[in-house]
Amino acid sequence: MTISAFDNRRTYSGDGSTVAFAFPPPFTTQTDLTVQVQAADGTIVTKALGSDYTVSGPPYTSGGTVTMVVAPAVTTTLIIYRDVPLTQNVTLQDSGPLPAGTVNAALDRITMWGQRLREMANAAFANATQTVAGLMSAADKYKLDGIAVGAQVNAVTTVAGRTGDVLLAKTDVGLGNVDNTSDVNKPVSTAQANADALALKIAQNLNDLNNKTTARTNLGVAIGTDVQAFNARLADLAGISWAQGDIIYYNGSSLVKLPAGTSGWFLRTNGAAANPSWVAVPGGGDLLSTNNLSDLTNKPQALTNLGGTATGTSVFTAASTAAARTAIGAGTGNGSVTSVAMTVPSFLSVSGSPISVSGTFAVTLSGTALPVANGGTGLTSVGTNGQILTVVSSAPAWVDQVTFRAPDLWVRCERAQGTADTPGSLTVGTYVTRALNTIKRNTIGATLTSNQITLPAGTYYARWRCVAGSNGGTGVSYTTRAKLYNVTASSNIELTNTETAYSSVSASSLTNTGETTFTIGSSTVVDVRQISGITAATTGNASNISGEGEVYSSIELWKVG
Image (cartoon, rainbow, N blue to C red):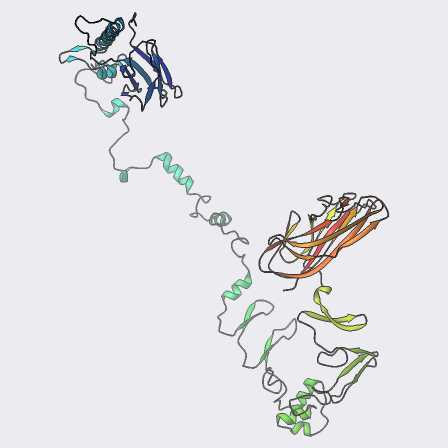
């Protein structure tokens, strides 16, 4: 090849993304090229062939392309130049052949050496200055090139308008008010003192309590919110000296204490306009179950307590417990009542004698037997825990109390007049969650979200109902069923009965009802679901018969444990 021009270097500005850079001058091998990256401060780093960059080719008669592994960053400069090793590898034999290619290659290499040497010489003289010590280095010249024009002037001609040997005072540089007073001795400026005085007002602290409302606000003790409002009765309490057993009452003007009474006495109210008092039990003793009537020495008082009247002198002289029972008509043995004098209204009748554990005691009301808890003709057994006594079909019976109390939770689906229920048509063979959007009663802290109810732990009795409609036309037979579902446990709680209808009109409806009891150990989400046997079934047809709205599914729950 030939080298017809002086061309030995290329430089490129880095942009952080470009990695391929052309090098048009010819060269013989990849190692002929040197690749460097120069930083903004002039620092130059020489890159390694293979790990930092690659060179395309050969042949390299028309140059090549240098591809960087990492794109040169912005503010950096990529430098590529030819730097051929100063070696000569051509050997020609005496009287031997003289190949033109070999000779041209050797000449080309010599030309490349010359161009590199000239480039180095030009750079040395262009970037260096002759000094006493020799040529200035390129790094030193780079530093000098960065000095602003005029900055290299070293002579100071004047300072603060003065020339010659200048001695500066603090006023010369605008610091006339500055002194060397220590921090602890520095005075507060007038402006600062005024600002401090403003800061020490009632709105900021409590040093001037002319406005007590503002002071309380500053302290965060608003009366009635943070602290109890003053009340004269609080002063009454603060002035009382207490002893164990004392009680407190209002005497019409203030709160006072009533000291503890004598052991066995009872506290008696003496009416709305009088003070309470401690009173001894008439006849002595106290109000314990073992003493209320068994050891009263005053038998007339005992009879009076029972609503009776003394009928003989033996009543007044009996001194033993047995005699006391006899005096009031009680038996010996275990204390069973063997006979009782009773005044019975005309509409009641009492039969059975003797009245004892093994006997029979019957009470009737207008000829109908009344229940007696322990035996008798009214009922033969005591109800289970939680049941109450009532009349069912004209006969006494024990029934669950939930039948007679409002539900603890009552939720249902309510819609505007003429609005059908959602979520829409029932799916054949698939349960659909019924809409529940209105809480009518809630005393147990349950919540309703997106048709699902969250219940607290406990035992429940539940009743629910779902209405389903058919729009399948006349002659359509369809079935539905509903269930109460445990969403948390992904399991059924209870199924309702299966309802089947044969529609003789274009639209008809079925209602599924169910009831059950269940227990949950922790907070649980439940809902009501319904399934149909035909695709024409809906979750309810709007009535359009009044302006009172529509009601569809509902559920009632009683918390019984």
